[in-house]
Image 1 (tube, rainbow, N blue to C red):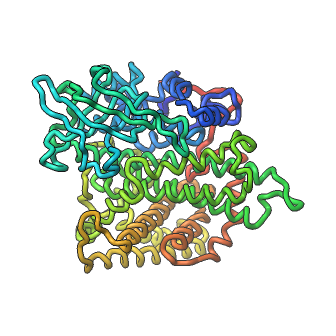
Image 2: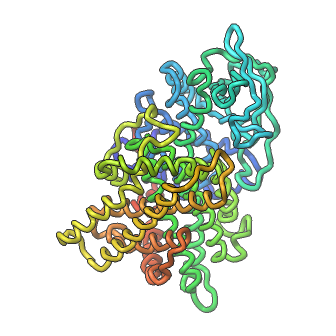
Length: 594
């Protein structure tokens, strides 16, 4: 049975997958909340869920079409990950380690790509990313693991820890020094099939007990003079760190889809409670503070939806800028949703802390599980650091930014097809200015022209959006001006002020993403999203939380309408997102055959 979107519709994929998975509140369904509770309480790896997903050939979404898979776009793959994560983060993460296969799709030979495709599709192969070490953490260049040349290949010695799926994964992407004296340029990347290795020459460390994702296999692996074949070298000697960092650009952006799924469930379970719990003579949702928290959480999800979807589409349109977009997405979305979930806990009161009472303890589990996403594939500090090192470089690129119009349309118009993905165009440092920020003026001019021609209604709303847009332009200009005249700060010795600037940069990118997403997606003028009533409050919320520019009146006035729309989506069983995808017909199943 294949759950594949052959119709070209992202909604059809969402609805087909959701329908096949069934109601997450039904304990008999795979990836239900009850199943998630079971693996969390017993700390068991979700073998049953993973097997079920392979049976439905969901792994095909991680393999390019030209290699027999179903991968066509990162936004579609993000939808799959998001839907799985809204049911159980542990199972979704364990299955989605498949996205590390993009290391081979980017840097592998044709033979390596064909082998890996068969490994995933025919052998149901799984994998781990063996980069970090106990003594060095995120400092990958300081790797103590060594790979020495032999007559038949390499001999690897060293330890990697902590590693997700180090024990239950059959394939390891291992970063090791082939020339220890060369530093970062002496690191190489290996794609190791454990089946090729002498079991007496490698071992796994015990499972680590973790705060969240308690069913996950977080462990480690030790190599002791382990012989590996020459064909396992991926991307050539000395190119390992560069390939690893290019791969991170992809996986970091996809990690945001995990946060979106977790955030949807956290808000949905809290809304269920608020709509049914009576307190002080009325429903919880009618309490002003509860309504404010719920509407603010809805805004946060819409903002993060804009940031994530455009970030994933940007890989197809401007992969040269991916070092920027991926770091912004990976920093902004997980941290925003973590804070959002914490805020929702106040509405649930004591029930947020219970492991069984409310919805199989789903909220407390989501609260714990979602917190780890910001650590995956580069922590918040790592991503902010990756941005701040490029700020001065970006100010020089602005003068040659060119016409963003066609690119903005392809990135932000969700109905527009994206070009085929070309991993060879990924760059460790952006070779272009950030189109999201530098394109704000273009989108505002288009909006002004449409308003002058009376092609769009509600002129008062348009004027308010234009005013926010002008504020956004000034903030972007102020950020750029700061780095035209600033002095360079070397390496990891960055000041606290630089980190604050990087955080502001992410907020500016998020605001710009919201603006572009609305400008380029207004074909259905009757929809809540197209009417734009959410945009000014969303911009105001970003300005308020991150830029110290306050418009509390705008946010307060918007809450009743936001709360009404939130309840409509909940009632109609739709995703809390800009595109409002249907979550499936749970009265039966829906199969979309390949």
